[in-house]
Image (cartoon, rainbow, N blue to C red; front, side, top):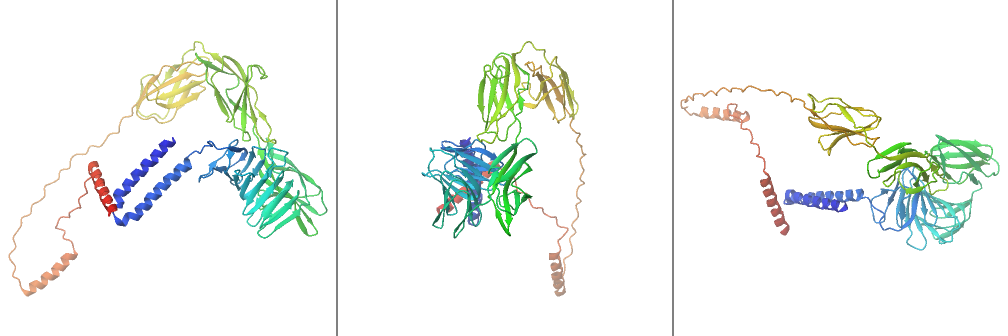
Length: 589
């Protein structure tokens, strides 16, 4: 496919070059516009090819995976100009750029277990080519969870943003980039921040603001307990009951603030709290929350945490339907398994067994999508279920209900008998509704096909139905048509095909009688007597001549401009060759 696209671009370029050369380049006035047009077309084609090309991961080395994604998240490979959508369970590689749009979230889990939480409107660049992994933090806000005990990954991680640097070991930190500052909050562990050649150690529970001139760090006295930062609360209802709590501190008024954005510009709820905990019902969405206290006229804020409320759906099985019987003739049939897609799933497990408890002759299949097909199943009764899994600890495993289906070899099946429209039936005008009817014993699942060919290679219409009739309401053009029906439940063949004809008579055309044109009258030319020229006559003729110049002579016939004759293909090709030769001579000058 890629070679075909390249060939198409090459042929298009050659055609455009010859066309522009033959029509524009032989003229000096058109040389610059022609070059601009040619460049515009070529670069437009190349950009379209680059934009539509599906970039594969190829031989790139994976450094982690996308384990969570919500809304629009995109990735750009190194040395590429086009962004492409990235999905859950997709790998990420060295020097990938990741960005999120509004109301989007993503989590990257690196090979060593480190989690990078990316908030909305954020862009990062992953550079793992050196000894210390580096994240170039462009804009937005991120959180890095690296506080676990893992001796395999003992090197530091470096975060760079607008010339400012943060180095962490085994720590959990949150970073937010504003126009003026880089805010760093150390939730667990320690961090070292560097700005303007000034280095400072940041302890746990400290918020550091890295500005253009200095580093300002302060201990946060309001310590949040629950819910944890960046948690996803999974609920099956329209709203979720969320418990908020924090450590007691000092005296004064305490407020819980919940916002739609991290800058708290859009406040969803602000509630005055008398104690150190409260429960609030929150609908699905992404939220930011903090606790603020006002004491002696001074306002103090806690750290800002993120909260994601996700509505989780149950796994529903679509096919095979429960207790469905799948018939076949000779070889084993192709069984299609299909279920609904779970938003939070990173993969599925299909469990197949011969017993209802899924313990006898059990087979398991790992699948990334929400469908698969098996063609090697023997006759018998089967039981199956789907398990949805995720790589994130806070997302529960979901199981579908156990469904049953059977595979049987079909016996002699009563054929489907076609009734209406009858064979060789002809419609005298294009019908607005064609009623198809047939009959079959002990079945209620059929497949209707309509074609313009007796071998049904060109299918005009195909429809499954649970009734022995169907009303076709689409317009059919004049011509011959064939229709047949198949019994789906009993594994039978198609019925004998019936033929019908749609033949609407053509509309009558008006025949006009010839118009007789009378012959033109021939006027006799009477010779005028010669006029004696005098001085007075000359003056009179001058005035008359000037008047005639301003008024057209109605007696003279009006000559219509001739239409140019249509240029033949040979003449057009000859003209292009001549123009191309002129252009080549012009280039040699």
